[in-house]
Amino acid sequence: MEPQKAHSGSIMALFKKPYWVFLFLLFTALAILSVQIATQSIVPFQIFGVSESEKAATVSDPGSCAGLLGELPVRRHVASIEEFGGVGDGKTSNTAAFWKALIHMQRFVDHGGSQLNVPRGKWLTGSFNLTSNFTLFLEEGAVILGSQDPKEWPLVEPLPSYGRGRERPGARHTSLIHGDGLTNVIITGQNGTIDGQGRMWWDLWWNKTLNHTRGHLVEIMNSRNILISNLTFMNSPFWTIHPVYTSNVVIKGMTILAPLNAPNTDGIDADSCINVCIEDCFIESGDDLVAVKSGWDQYGIRIARPSSNIIVRRISGTTPTCSGVGIGSEMSGGISNVTIEDMNVWNSAAGIRIKTDKGRGGYITNISINNITMERVKVPIRFSTDSNDHPDDGWDPKAFPKIKGVFISNIISLNSTKAPELTGLKGASFEGVCFKNVTVLGLAPTAAWHCEFVSGCTNAVFPLPCPQLQNNGSSACCL
Ligand SMILES: *[C@@H]1O[C@H](CO)[C@@H](O)[C@H](O)[C@H]1NC(C)=O
Ligand SMILES: *[C@@H]1O[C@H](CO)[C@@H](O)[C@H](O)[C@H]1NC(C)=O
Ligand SMILES: *[C@@H]1O[C@H](CO)[C@@H](O)[C@H](O)[C@H]1NC(C)=O
Ligand SMILES: *[C@@H]1O[C@H](CO)[C@@H](O)[C@H](O)[C@H]1NC(C)=O
Ligand SMILES: *[C@@H]1O[C@H](CO)[C@@H](O)[C@H](O)[C@H]1NC(C)=O
Ligand SMILES: *[C@@H]1O[C@H](CO)[C@@H](O)[C@H](O)[C@H]1NC(C)=O
Ligand SMILES: *[C@@H]1O[C@H](CO)[C@@H](O)[C@H](O)[C@H]1NC(C)=O
Ligand SMILES: *[C@@H]1O[C@H](CO)[C@@H](O)[C@H](O)[C@H]1NC(C)=O
Ligand SMILES: *[C@@H]1O[C@H](CO)[C@@H](O)[C@H](O)[C@H]1NC(C)=O
Ligand SMILES: *[C@@H]1O[C@H](CO)[C@@H](O)[C@H](O)[C@H]1NC(C)=O
Ligand SMILES: *[C@@H]1O[C@H](CO)[C@@H](O)[C@H](O)[C@H]1NC(C)=O
Ligand SMILES: *[C@@H]1O[C@H](CO)[C@@H](O)[C@H](O)[C@H]1NC(C)=O
Picture 1 (cartoon, helix red, strand yellow):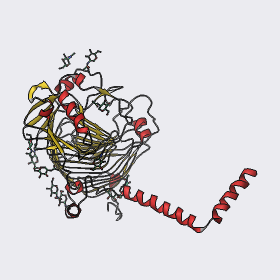
Picture 2 (tube, helix red, strand yellow):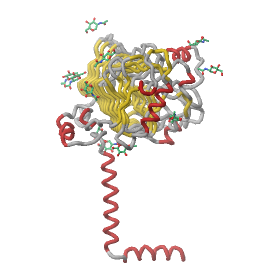
Picture 3 (cartoon, helix red, strand yellow):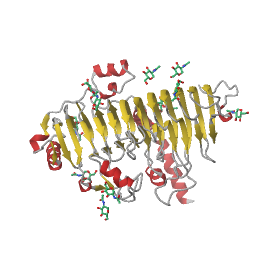
Picture 4 (cartoon, protein in one colour):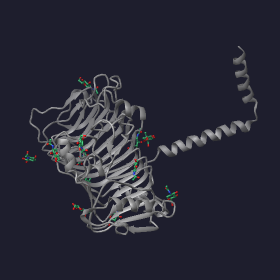
């Protein structure tokens, strides 16, 4: 009885305090609320400084990431890799030169920032780390070549949301260009090239002698305000550009190339990232052109870092065994508020693919896909749940993903092989799946939609949709 009395007594005392206490509490609550609102409505976001003219650009050019950049920062300290002993002959290793350069550049992080220029030539190097308030600038004709010595791609810790390397247990090879805990980084230039020379790694994968997960061409983690633009990236050992646990990312005007049979050479993988704008890229590779992910099974569920506020537009390209855009299959931290538009995909296995499975947990919600043209894409739209790909035996068979709100509109697919194939999960149907103005041509007359464990509706689709998605006259459908 006694403690309860004391407790209620203190609550009474609070109510007896002067009214400014309540005002203070009210203002605190309002402040917290407004901060939350400010951090939630982050598309459009601004990644570098905001000038009045750039604000105007944001408003007058809503269909471009350019307005999100703000004024590109001018770096006070500019140097060339040659000043650090670099030799651009394609044979000499520049690993030490890049390390020396980056250690030097770190001095300017809080003193006006820095820019490292890479001139015309072939600059062979092992992995190196970037720094903050920094621009890596590849001049016309500059080619950075990835080392052919695996020891020059040292091992780093696996990502906590994967619990292990994606391909092999334990540590993973670092990326050729790596950034961790940075702000305000630009990788750009006059269409210079970063060539990972990944064949060595693909061979190891093909002949099953890979000891550790392959590295990316560029990985930026735990960072914010990142721009990657106007360059050609080629022959990544593994996924090409991998922003992870990062916010405010613009990837624009990139050409990304890998042989069409090179394993897992995804173009761009936004992974547990908030506020990402990817546009005007040509991508030709052996895996998804663009993928959105957020961690893997019990590890991704525990870390709970979603991917949200993602825009992907004006991407074109081909990937014969994978998809134009892939959402998942790693999505355990959740994926929401994704807009994909104005894409052109040809000669590919799938156009749009949503992949998940039992054990993933997480969610995929509020996905909007609009104005995609496909030519000779086998399955233009595919939802699948059969990946059966788990980090270890510790995955939870009861961890069902929740998929709700996928809006697909204005799609034309020519010379397709199959009608949409939509397979949800038994016990966790995909809900609110809406197709509007979707035309799939070139099919055999017997080709039919395949739908299992999905619900939603359709409006103006060809061929005739499966019964699960037939509108049945409901006017609220597919708004
Ligand atoms: C999705 O967008 C809406 C509207 O802009 C916003 O309220 C919501 O917080 C966003 N979701 C996430 C997870 O950012
Ligand atoms: C980078 O530069 C900005 C603006 O000059 C400054 O506010 C910031 O402290 C610098 N350092 C880092 C790590 O961002
Ligand atoms: C690069 O960053 C990683 C952490 O992301 C760290 O393990 C590694 O030691 C760094 N390398 C250098 C040369 O600073
Ligand atoms: C950049 O170079 C690539 C590869 O040479 C080329 O395909 C692409 O058209 C070039 N991009 C621009 C904008 O010139
Ligand atoms: C695997 O590929 C590497 C790299 O090409 C090659 O050196 C090695 O001989 C291959 N091993 C086997 C068992 O085929
Ligand atoms: C993989 O491990 C084997 C055995 O330890 C070793 O001989 C080989 O060099 C390693 N390969 C790579 C690419 O590190
Ligand atoms: C890309 O290059 C073009 C042409 O040089 C330039 O106008 C534009 O500002 C660059 N964009 C970015 C985002 O770097
Ligand atoms: C869905 O995401 C879009 C951005 O992709 C956003 O504008 C919209 O408000 C979101 N809707 C909800 C209900 O979160
Ligand atoms: C559809 O996307 C294409 C690029 O693939 C673009 O040229 C066209 O303007 C877009 N249409 C609309 C109505 O936005
Ligand atoms: C249907 O989608 C196609 C392909 O994007 C587009 O050309 C056409 O204008 C759309 N029709 C309507 C009625 O919106
Ligand atoms: C592709 O589609 C066009 C128009 O429907 C048709 O004329 C052509 O024969 C098709 N090509 C193939 C290889 O199916
Ligand atoms: C529409 O009717 C079909 C056939 O009667 C049924 O299987 C389906 O569930 C209905 N769809 C909706 C969205 O109510």
